Image: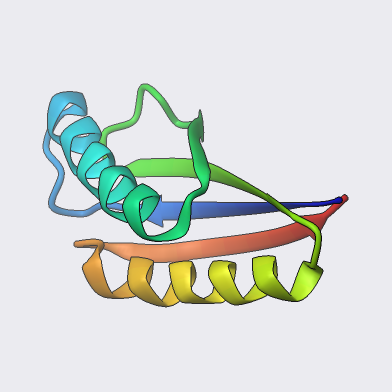
Length: 93
């Protein structure tokens, strides 16, 4: 069993409140959960309305399957987020 962990740090320049940031993140999470079957958690910057750090976890018996899903997730994130992906990190356990 392979556990994949993806962490994305996002800058949201058009977000003007915590409520608006959470609404945008929730929309993003819901959209990607339907397509990729991953678990999400907001890891850092909970009190900053223009930054977010999101962690995603996936489990599979093959590392290649998780890598492919995470690469697609990153591509889609860069397209749909009204902001900028500042950093990304992928780990496997």
